[in-house]
Image (cartoon, rainbow over all chains, first blue to last red; front, side, top):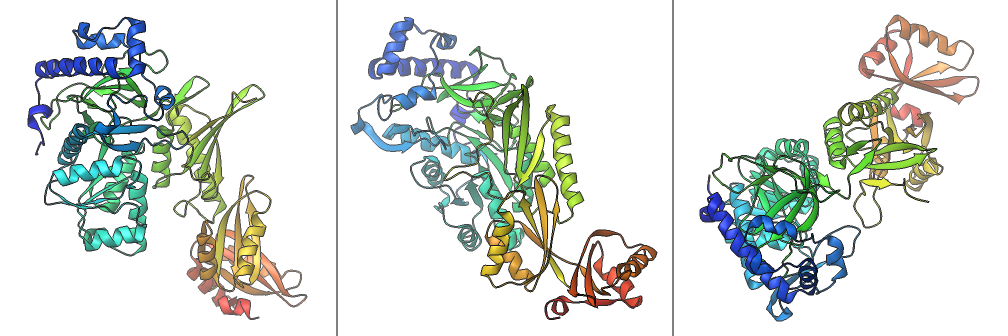
Length: 434
Length: 142
């Protein structure tokens, strides 16, 4: 197994701590001078960057939230003047206003190096032909991947948002060995391959990198089987680097966080209390090399756990588990906390394909009622009513068995859950409405 | 053997109008229609003159539809007409998933349609009993 940057990816714990501390101090220094928001916070909390002597001192600094970034739109969180910024992109978010993120030349270089690590971790090298099926636009994912892919010396196809048929023709004729896409889109391509009567074995695809939306182990298995590839997960966020915060190695057992660039913490999303290894909570990240858009203790909203212990790949960087869901998606009903990704996992197993669903929570006469709306797909439709009834019972039963949650299952037509120009909202909570 | 198109529909006003509108627009003739309802959703079944095209049109318009072969037979439109068929089905142990009928010519002939697991075997058994079976064309050009 090849490692792109052994010096940092296999750094010893002592050296890492020293490196993180130095980089943290210099980052805190810079933001205290150049970002009004941090200046004010440090003043209020009596934080003097020079006096941060240990990594644990970081915990004295309050969190930065997405709300803060939105209020700073467009440039108030920048730590450098615009003439030093070589690129501007926006963070995604289906329903919220965007956040503008800038990168200096150094930022782009770091980012490129981190993506090269992501790709190398998935066993990709200069002999590969990489098809990037992310939108090359305001969102950073496609260009981020592109730069990293060129850095490892692979041949890069910026397939972007070409239609599915076109993507597959390119994949077959250009002999793509790597597909980079959102997992749902990967599945759509797998379906199209079948529809076009192409045998996946006649393609050259061997690796898939999937990210940009929450997915599950079931979906990984399905993508691996249908496309005959090894499918890897990667993690990033547009406010920092996306991709380029963490990624899976060939062990496929957690994502190594690039700790020489980010300091991770896990907190209880309700109280903000720091949690230990193995405890599930919200990921908080501090950037320690970013110049244009540094963030201190940024609440990512992503739910995961940090995994302790050595990885068989030889990298020493800490691992995080696959992101389980978003704090803003999590809901509690009758004392049960549920992530939509858990529901997704169950539905994927039952349907044998990527499910489209929505959870609606209402209060009816002082009783909380959870409705699970599931879109019918050709894969699960049957013209025998008893099979459709059985499907409903099975979904209800599995959700009760595995999540301890009583739901009312409703089957709806395809496309019924998609709003105008938005993705499907996983959870609609009407309990606190008028 | 005739083909039956089945469509998933939510149980909401206007859904039937949508489907029939799509088919009318494409010049498709409906010979028989039945709806199995289950509270929040229903399965609409159609015998039409162009089943494959119908299925495509529905899928292109975002609906989930399937085609399957069914067994259609001609029976006399008189009391006891169906009883004879029912006896044969019982005797031959043919299990029916769904069934419906319609009259072709009042007082003379009716059509009885059954949806079964294995339509070929069912068709052979019925034919051996002297029942007159109908194909796609027989249904639409009677």
